Amino acid sequence: MDPMFGAEGWCHECGTPLRDQTGPLTIQASKFPTAKAWMPNWMFDVVCLASDLAKEVQTQFPVQLRDVHKPREGATGVKQLQVEATNERWYDTQELERAIRNRHRHGGERTGLRCSACNTWKWLPISEADVATRAEALATDQAIIASPEIFGDGSSSFRHLLFREPLAQTLKTASPRLWDVTSIRVS
Ligand SMILES: [Zn+2]
Image 1 (cartoon, rainbow, N blue to C red):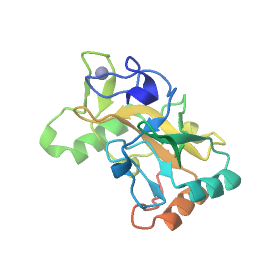
Image 2: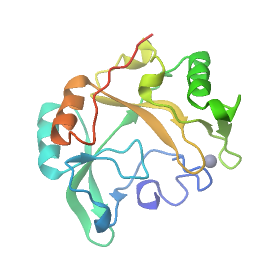
Image 3: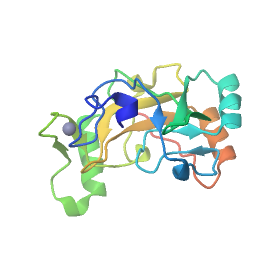
Image 4: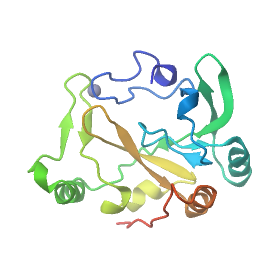
């Protein structure tokens, strides 16, 4: 996280970035999978593309890419898809709470936790398809967007991501075993 956000740019208690990404995602060489489109195993809102797929995606979609680095060696040719959070909330709070209680029945009434270090509210994890997305949040031209709502438990922290269907299909075609294309409900 330090190369991406700076040592002070993310909460070491709950794992939440506290500012926009300023530096490259940096991954040990042994952690690079052979898949064309993948997520680092500890970051559920980061999408990496092999260099040939990155070129294809960049010519077809209005996306920004960022170099992915290895420690010491620098840029690898692998690219990270840049994702911006919408200003508009994605979820109605009551619907979100209902979906989370449904998913985490053993958890009682708890739907999330406020971090005592950075004050960020993190919802317990659910998936994008578990709750209807507000139409207002989708009024954007971006091919990929992130939720302003933050999810996670313990030290995991991530935003929900949505892809326009053509981009989703491109990733699915490139790495069929890692991706499923699911439609969401819009309210
Ligand atoms: Zn925190």
